[in-house]
Image (tube, rainbow, N blue to C red; front, side, top):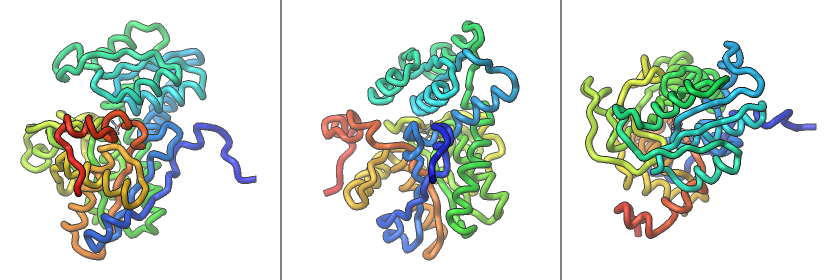
Length: 325
Ligand code: PMP
């Protein structure tokens, strides 16, 4: 028998695939961690499971309890599937700018979905603050608080980083990804540095996020905007505190989309835009490190989640993104 005991045991231990195009373009070996193979089809299943198990261990979540969270969608999907497998209820608050596929998936999983108009973090109507209020008002509920709950990044220190290190036989020269909560970049960064402090950790920041300027010049400042879902942070979350960032790149949506498109056409990988931004960052990092280096990044979620956006020519045109000839 070679079986998996239950759904939750399907989370993590994702494959690491060598990306032929990015490797050939740089003379390096660039690898992508296939987080779309998690049962919720994104990297956020790891954080969801870790946050729920941490709350259980602290005695904050009892059978029949409710999990409330504000999310761009993937964390909600992860929480809903973990909750279903463990017998909890979920209330998910999401900005209405996120893809229809994520909302439909959440409803299909049985989550109670609350959508709010996109608002700045300083507004009480922001999805994060709305979710905290709902958690406070709901008896027996916990607020998952993925941004400032470091059970999120712990999943990447003990899981993702260990897996990458083992899969690459301990020969890792660089790692990069973008930040939403920052759990992935900080957790994998801390985990890999604990193995070998020479591993170069690079942040790949989309336009409209403030972290590039923070790590480059010590000031949280943003310019431009991005249509990438799930990434782009304007503050130092608890998960980002102490993240060992050695260098940083600012990646445009078009640069990320070029890799989404090439990976689909040349390698049969159907990914979301944050994965494309990560791969673009990995190419930049490989060039920064020089030929022959081994670089890893995260393929965060499946492109099937964006058929109505990233894979719709009319949407691309409306957003000013174009496919290379
Ligand atoms: N890509 C996607 C599609 C996501 O949903 C998220 C999570 N918000 C990320 C990247 C970033 O991951 P993290 O929250 O660990 O920074």
